[in-house]
Image 1 (tube, rainbow, N blue to C red):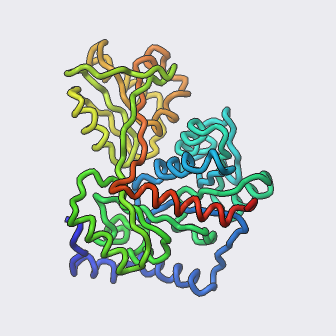
Image 2: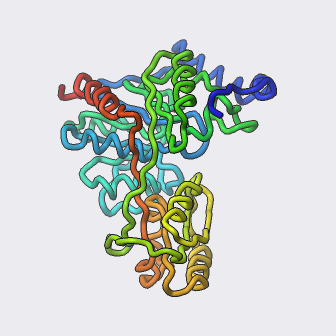
Image 3: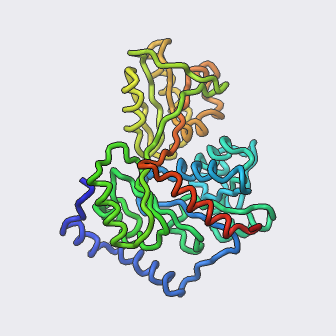
Length: 356
């Protein structure tokens, strides 16, 4: 149940956790100006969390891109987790995933007219974006909640419904990057993956967050789109009942996707790898063997994020690509709050864009 705060043992774990105290001291240094936070004369929106693992940052970033792209010039700035490059890099359509990371590559593939950039030092990244493109109105900072050298104009905190921050501990005893007091830096909070949330839990979440800070609270769920083939984007009309599916994932939590496919009546076998996994030649051999074992009528399903790590591998044969289908995912706002969220975002960008 979400309407329950952490017990005495978890509070004790945080109290004796050296990492928790280090993060507390770091945040105090930023709060008091001992370590500088940089503001910029342009609209900057941070989408992040205080939890290790997936809370839906990329789908929510993509939602804001869709909301703004027809009215404003957008740049997305990410650290580029796992990339084999350093410093600032602006992606184009031919930039390989290895140089920018899987999630920036996914965003660039879906929104080719949006500037997608990576830089481990976000201050340098923003400065390069502003200098290089005089038309940029707003910069979206993907996963920058702990990167306090930048002070965003709008700070959005994502909280996974399945792992509420008020019931968790700071690593290594839990999965929090910092204590739940980090909520106080947020300008709005979004409880994500709320497919099963009850009315009672929803009201309790709002009360808890507003007790910490009086900010807007929204609730979202993930909505799966229509499957399409990796090699030619051809849509899959339907999955016939009892079809054998090999689900290949390298994401934080593949269970909801598996459940979605099983609900379509398919028989699902999985090849599960850790988040951001870089597929090796041996992995491809294992995937091919598992696919062949399920029979030639079987298909392979993967995520958009995994697809950008798979599709350019020389060891992945074209005949296998023809049997790989991608499951897209999008954010939907619950309880008729989409209009309110959109208005907050658009008002902020209109008032703070460089060209306003």
